[in-house]
Length: 268
Length: 179
Image 1: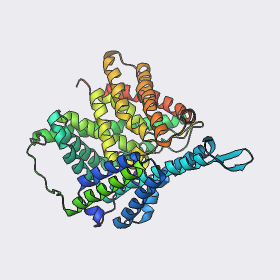
Image 2 (image 1 turned 90 degrees about the horizontal axis):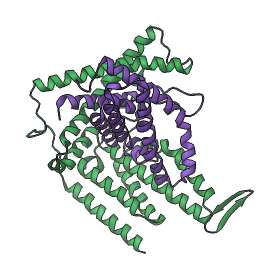
Image 3 (image 1 turned 60 degrees about the horizontal axis):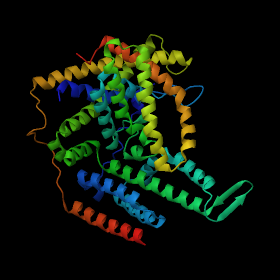
Image 4 (image 1 turned 90 degrees about the vertical axis):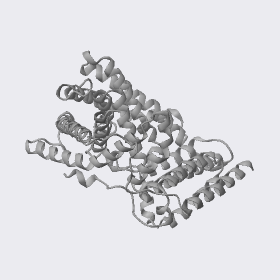
């Protein structure tokens, strides 16, 4: 078995749509504010407005809908279970449907729709962010958003550096794990069948060498960086610098409209 | 922050991600053992409280920006905000607590003590954050959520023991704390 076949290289789909070209910082901030809006909304009407806005976003992003569906699949069962739970346990409102011992009340339906919409909106907006922005851009955007926190001695640059280093080393360590698995197989280890305690023991025979080799790499990396005079983020320049454009201004405008709409619906 | 500490935490983050690609071990009862949570229990015991917690914080940030680090190559805010996100968000704290307890007992650490620490940090803390989060996002009743969680307990107990065993081995062959 080859471990690298499990590796889905990023869920980022390159493109040059309006959403792709937005600054990573504005996208991050927008998604966080949008999630805030989702929890501020308290009616199905509000959720329908937020959902239709997202559908427009999907069309603009020019990313095939199948990618978004893939994002929903992992939580599909949970959505289904939630619907059933609310339908069967909520006994408020009028009796709408009755069949033998199954009784469904109007408030149960309302709540099931409400929660389903909420979950759908959260899932789709989050996948839209990661489908249209590469992890590297997001890491950099995150670093720049959090930059002011350096004043209170939070190691923002260091966190971002650690993120890019571990991102860089995931494929390397996957290859390493693959090699170790093959080596242990050559010695007769069996990972797919056999009694559980044997398989657990065989797993240990992969994990320990894998960890030791990663620790050695970490030591070597640290020595290499120290000997090249790495001294942190102070005064460091970048190859690619992103800037705010009219696109980001437009996004701000769109958000304000959404916020006012949601607040006025809430007031009704 | 020392460069060496940063590199260890970063590489450990990568290790936790790689463990997520490994095939899980099915159990005759309950949910299969996924290897990713091994990494969470090991982080504290191997790196100590501060670095272990930091390493998993980086892991969560990576997951949030959509890097395929979660079990089976998943990633993205979707997972973190989804119903099971609380279990993942609890990992830095879990690693910190295991690391704290392990550091306190560093000289007399053995498999059984670490097993207990793993149960406290890796199981109790994770459930204490994960279950209320699940209830809050889906508005389940608490009791069915607790019952559903029972299916994870056999696998988690085996994990707590095996990872204690691995941590003691690693401590002997490649000590990182106090080096």
